[in-house]
Every structure is written in structure tokens, then in C-alpha cells.
Length: 268
Image 1 (cartoon, one colour):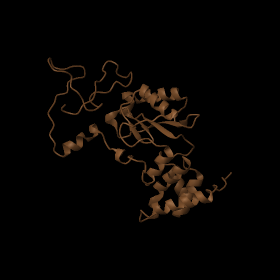
Image 2: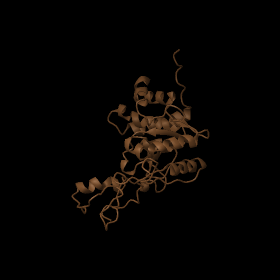
Image 3: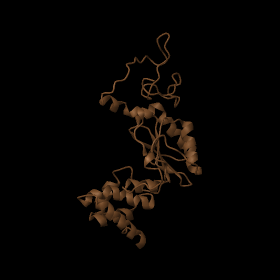
Image 4: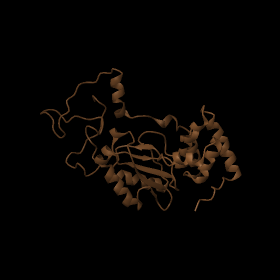
């Protein structure tokens, strides 16, 4: 049977969202281009994109609900069902997987008692495996509401989700302090993060990610010879490496015979 029309937002909520939507739409020469941020906006209201939210987007943009639904179901950042305050995503793409991402994901599923895209009973954490986070040089990577937690282990990841569920403060490896998923969605809709110091803490790529940029600028680095792992010419200590590409962190049982030492700046 066809679904009944989506219920509308309460009058005060709709008025507030319409004011926000006008601000978003004004940024674009073609109002249709505002659909992506508007989907984040309605997601910030309910924690996921509901039929009511899609109907709202269609109304303010002059689109059909089919057009809005096609976009909302295409992008994985839009949730289609209720989810937790903290989206914990474990990268299981190739490099993170072999560096320990698969082990982290399996450990977290058992530790939290949930499967992929499922939420803990307290409504705090939704666990999911995700594709590449463009942070391969810090593999394996876990993200919480799209903030980076680099070089993770099963033990550190379990402590992370325990801290989130208990309300303890957690600090990402780089990036802004953690906020709830609804707050994150509003920021992704294009509204300023008004938390004190959050913008300054936003950060960017880490040192390992910036090596290519430094080379492109013509900066010269001392030449070095990278020997097979665990081996070094007599009289030399094993080379220190900037990123996990050269010397993986000891993150899982995938390579127990070759644990990595601490990372260091190139040339140090």
C-alpha cells in the first residue's frame, strides 16, 4: 500500500528550519544546489533524514520527494534510521584493514554487542565500517562524527567507545573537539561552529600527509636508504619513519614479528 503523506514538523520547528533554509539557499545561484546542506540541516534536527525532512527539502526547493530521496539514499553520510550520538566509523579499506582495521572492527562489534550500522542500547554509539578516510598514512584510523583518531589499536578503540558512552571527554588526534552527531550535521550544513576554540582546533592534515606538499614546494630533504624492516647496516640504528606506510604501528596480530617504533619527522 502507498505510504501516507509524511507528517509535518511542528509549526515552531518548521519556522526555525525555514529561516535556516533561506540562509543556506541564498548561498547558491541555483536553489537546487542547496539540497546537500539542507539534508544535513534536517538531519541535525532529528539525528537522521526522515520522510518529514525529505518532504521539507522538497517543499523549500521546489523538488519532488523522489528527487530528494534519490540524493538522500545515495550518500552514506545521511542516516535513514535513528542512530547514536556518536558515529564510530572504522576504516576497513585495504591499507587500514591489513594494518589492523578489520581486527578493530571485530573487537568493537563484540565489545559493544552490535553489528554494522547498529546502535548500542543506550543510544550513544552507532558502529559502522567505512571506506577510505584519506588518512592512510595513519592507518588504522577510526573516526567519531568525522573527527580523526589515528594509529588505533583494538584496546585504544575499546577505551574510546567506553569513554564516549560514559560521557568522558575524548580528544581526536587532530581536529576539533568531539560534539554530538546532530551538532556535527548542523556544522556540515554550513553553519558556524560556535564552541569556543573549536575553529582554531580544527586542524588539517598531519605531518605525514604533508610530505608531498613540501616536496612540491621544492623543499629538499636529506636522502636516506630504507632497509628491509628489522635490518640495518652494521653500526646503524634502524631508520625512524614518518608514517605507517614505511613502518606500521603494532596495531594487530597481522604482523607480530615486525612491531614498529615511534614515528618521527623525516630527517630527525
